[in-house]
Image (tube, rainbow, N blue to C red; front, side, top):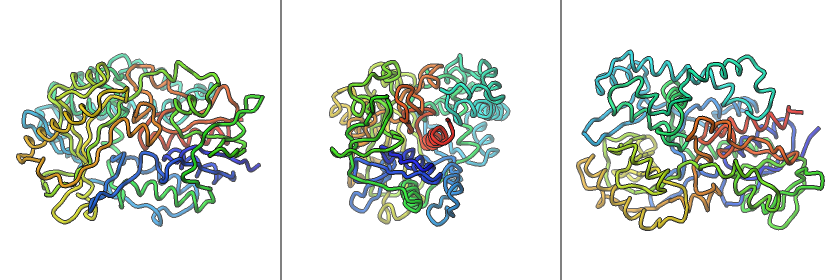
Length: 491
C-alpha cells in the first residue's frame, strides 16, 4: 500500500531516504527550511571564486551509485567523478613532508622512507584496519543497533566475539603506537579521529578502521564540486516524483492520542502523513518539534562532536606544491584536542586543513588564483567569545601557512568569508554546531547514538549524522538505507 511520508530536511540523508521510499512506491514530501537543498553540502560564490561550503572529502562513491542503480537511472546523466592519484599532502612543524598516494604500494614505500618505518609495519596496520572494517561493518554500519534481530545474524555475532581483539579497550593513539615508532606517522593516523569529530586520545582504537575506507576505496573529486552530490540527488528525487519544498520550515511534529506521528505543521499549516522522518539533528527535533513530550535525555546530553572554524579565502596566487587536500599538523596534537574537548576553545597551536578545489576544477578560481577552504577543528558553540577566538586563530593560521609555504599569505587574501560554530548551528540546526552529532570519545559511543526510529512514537523515524551510524557522507547515506529499510520491511 502506498503511504504518504514527510521528510524533514533535505540534507544528503534526507534526500537519499526520500529517494528510497519514493522508489518503493510511497508518496514522499521533503520540507526544507532554507532556500537551498543539501544541508551542509552546499556552495556559495564570492566574487570570481566558487566554494563548497561544507564537506570537502568524497569517499566511497558506491553509495551514490547504489541509489541510481536502485532507481534504474543511469548515474552518468546526473553525476560524475574522478579518482585522485594523491590522497593528501602532509606538512609537519619540523619540516617533514609526506605525499600520500592512492596506490597502496607506493603509499607504503613512501611512508616507510619518509618516517623511517618498516614497510611490513605499515602493511600490517592497513591489514588490521581492513580486518576491523570487515568484521564490524555488518554490526555498526549496515543495520540498526537497536533492533534485537540485528544480533541474531552470524556475521554480527562474529563481530561481537571479535570486538575485544579490535582495540576497543585502547584509544586510537595507543592503537597506532602499537604499530609505529615515529610519532609523526602516529599523528597521521591519529587524525582519522576527526572524521567523526572525536579526539584520538579518547576515541577507541577500533576507529583505526577508518583509514581502510580512504586507502582501499580512495578519494574522489565530483565534477562540478561537492555540490554536484546534492544536485544529482535532487534531480533523481524529482525524476521519481518526490515533492521538494524549499523555504518550508517545519514547526512541529504532530502526535495523535495513541502516540503515533501523524504529520507535521509547516508554516502553521497542518500536513498529515502516515510516516514522519526527521533529517534534522535529534536535539532540536525533540527540543523544538516535539516540545512538551518526554525526550531521551541521556542520549541528548551526550558529548557532541567537534565543530569547525572555516575561512574561505580567495588567494591571488597559485601554489604548485599544494594539492586538493593538504594538512598542516599542530606540533602538540594532544594539547590541541584537550583545548577543544576540555577547555572548549581553540589553542594557538592548531592543525590546519587546506582544501583547494581549483586544483581539479580550474573554473572555481580566476586564472593565477586559488580558492582556499581553510579549516581548523573547533569546539561546539557554548557561548564562547567567538570574535576573539576567530581573530586570534586567523592570525595563527596565516603565520603557520606563511612559515610552511615560505611566503606571507596575508597580502594574498583578496576576498574572505567565515563560517564558525554559531553559523553552522543556525544554518543547519546542528546542535552546538557539531559536525557529526554525538562524539565517539568512549568505547560505547556507537551503541549510545540515537536509533533510526522512535521507541516512544510510532511511525516516527530519524536519519542523518546525529543518529546511527554517524556523520560524514558515507555514514549519512548508510543511515538513509537503514531508516528506509526499517520503514519498508520492519513490520
